[in-house]
Length: 293
Image 1 (cartoon, rainbow, N blue to C red):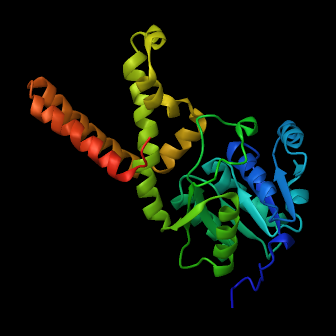
Image 2: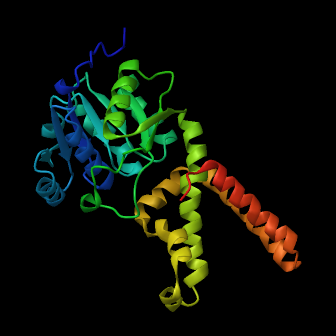
Image 3: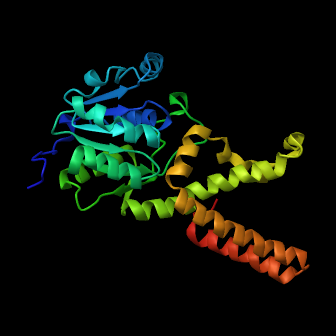
C-alpha cells in the first residue's frame, strides 16, 4: 500500500494550492481551471498586492496571501517559486499543510530542492520541472496553453511515495505536459546543457555584441534577436539557478569555450574546410534532435 494511504482516484475531489502566482504558477492555474479536473484551485502569494493582482486575473480561483488559509484541506501543494524560495518555504508550509497532502515543485534545479524537501516532507515530496517558460515573468505573462505539448520531468527517488508520484503525474498531464522521469542528479546534468548553458551563452553574447557599443542593437535583425531572447529573463532567478547548479554549468561552459576555440583556430588559420565542418556538424546535430522551425 502507498505510504500515504491516500486514494487519489476521482479528480474532481481534489484541491490543489499553487504557491507563487507568476508566469509558471499562473499558467498552471489557468491550465487546471481549463481542464476542470480539480475541484478547487487556490493561489498563494506572499505579498498582498501580488494576491490582489492574481485575484483580478483569475477570478475563478481562490487567492490568498495567508499561507495557512491557502493550504487548508489541500490534497497537493505546488511550489512555483525561485529555487531558494522553494527550499526555504518547506518548514513553514509543513506547519499548515495536511499530513495527507502531496508536495511538488516546478524548479529548474532539482538536486538541492529534492534533498531539502524530502528531508522536510519525506516521501510525499516529488520534484518536477515543466520545460516551458518565457523570458517574460509575472502573472500578466501567464497563459493557459503554456504547458501544451511541453515535457515535464519528474525526479522521484527511492524514498518517493508512489501516490505522490501518481498525483504529480496527473497534475502535469492535466496541464498539458508529457512526462519523463530521471534522477535529480541526471536532471541537473541535462539542464546544465540544454537550459542553463544556453541562457549563459545568450547573456555572454549580448555582452560580446553590445558591450563596446550598445547602439548597434538598432541594426540587429532576427539572428541577434533569436539567439539572445532568453537573456531577457529575470537576473535574480537565473543567478540562483546558475549558482545552485554551478558545477554542471561550469562543465558546460568549459565545453562551450572548447567549441569556440575550435572555430577560432579555423578562422585564424583561414581553414575554410575546418570552418565548414564545424558549422555542418552543428547544423546536423540540431536538425537531428529538434523539431523543424
